Image 1: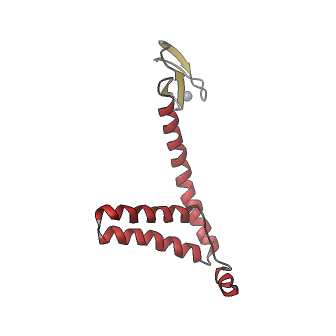
Image 2 (image 1 turned 90 degrees about the horizontal axis):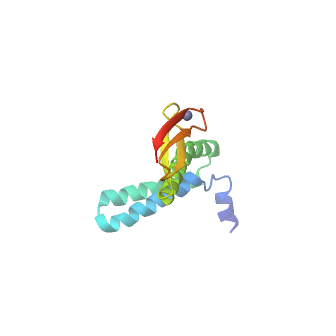
Image 3 (image 1 turned 180 degrees about the vertical axis):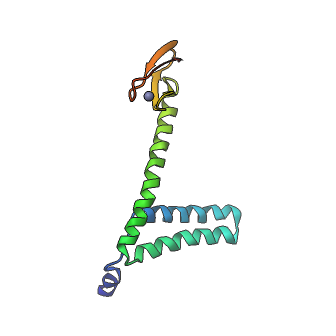
Length: 130
Ligand SMILES: [Zn+2]
């Protein structure tokens, strides 16, 4: 038991990028049940291997920097997905427009006829049919 603990001491461990790599690895491996391709199999293994190597790495700072880079791409993507889901959920109640001046997204209630919309960011007003 001590040896196992010693082995994991000073290792980088788990982070969000590793979790994503593991998920990608398992999903690709699962997809391979449809394709039966050695290339797809290899791709899945590459994801899993990368996750294992990062988990066991002793270069913690480098791994943390990689994770930050990953999160800087992942977080905006996630918020875009959330916005998409919200729009779909509210599609019968609201319409979305972009401000012609600053391209801020503006949500307005549907079926109000032609209305004047004031942009909450730049104050620009424009008329749209809801
Ligand atoms: Zn605006």
